[in-house]
Image (spheres, rainbow, N blue to C red):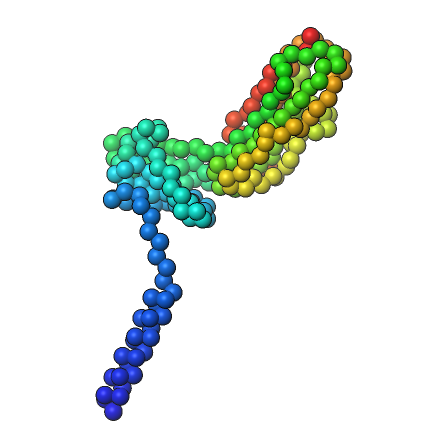
Amino acid sequence: MNKIFLLMTVVVLMTTAVGTLATDRWINYTAGNNVRAIACEGQRYVWCGGHGGAARFDINTGQRVVYTKADGLADNDVAAIAVDSMGNKWFGTSRGGVSVLSQMPAISVSINQPSYHLDDRMIVEASLQNPAPLIAVDIYLGVGLPDGTFLSWPSLNEGLMPAYDDFTIPDSFSFGPSVILEMNLPELPAGDYFWFAGMTKPGYVSQTVGDIFIAPWSFE
């Protein structure tokens, strides 16, 4: 009886071991010989740090991007990594202090010439890139007038109003440049104008996300 019980126990243990081996899935990433810090960025990227700088791994593709002193890191010996709510990456190094990598979305606007006259054709293009994880923003586009007032796109009504509110930009997103306005200009007061493009935290016009882009032009 004892022999039968022992045999059944061995069979159960072997079955459990085989089942565990069949379900475990290990993936190894090369980030140097000494990994001292790990941080997750959203559900797609993993950051690792050690003696060779910092490496970002794309879980979906397996792609690796390495950052060292040559890229602006304070020191190649990374001891700690943290990612804040705005997507900034913070690196604590052994000898160089703390570095921060800001990968914010960027919006820009461009025009086809620097000065215009009556009936000239204006072509305005906009582009949007987001190298960071997805983020929700209010997007502003418009024209600044010589008297200091603003016209908001697409209505071109006076005032500062978002073109898109609470707009979610996917991660690794790229759009444009794409034409957003094409028109023959009417008679305008002579002076200096500018197109602007910017983003803010949803509902907070004073809390900008990334830089505000300005494309100056004049009407003569």
